[in-house]
Length: 114
Length: 110
Image 1 (cartoon, each protein chain N blue to C red):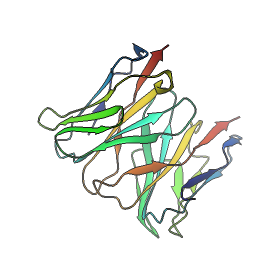
Image 2: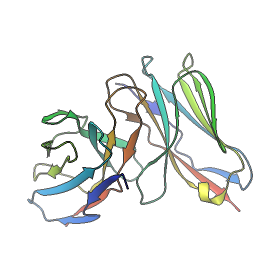
Image 3: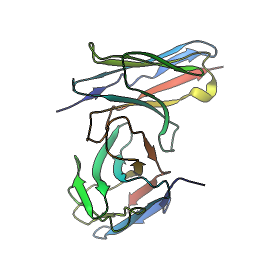
Image 4: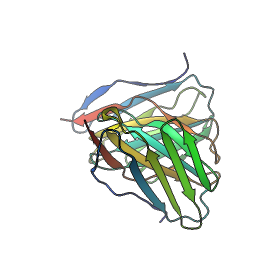
């Protein structure tokens, strides 16, 4: 059963803490992405990766970090430098980062800062 | 700044009617166009993709693309209450990530 999994579904963070969101895919997709969605807003790109051990900043990378050590996995760390991290975080993947390749999303992680 | 614009809505239609959702984009080099449906609290689900000018039909959904006018639309025929959701338009050019609009909320009343 192919797909994208994200964990946890809900995450609560205290001020000053770093937290890591997990994203795993078994679709054999080369490209993976992290987006952030705030209420009433569209999706904003945080980071993306086209191949293992390579990733690029998106529009709102400040306060976030990623790694891509395996093709299947693309974890996102929300650091204490991210001043307003409460949001819905979405991971996505596509065959390659080229035109005409559809992007599919995981179920998301809802992060709340206490 | 490359942008994708959508009317936020809500767009309200009665059950059985045609819902028309619209999207404009600023990057003339855009090559791929997608419509995603997002239910409240859930992640986006891809429902249509279109790459060339004209219409593309899939069941009750029709995507329309006009590159000269930088305009893409989604028609939903025989709208059902289960179609009530936010519809996101996304656009990309070769080698780049998708750019999303903020979405249009559709409400179908029974």
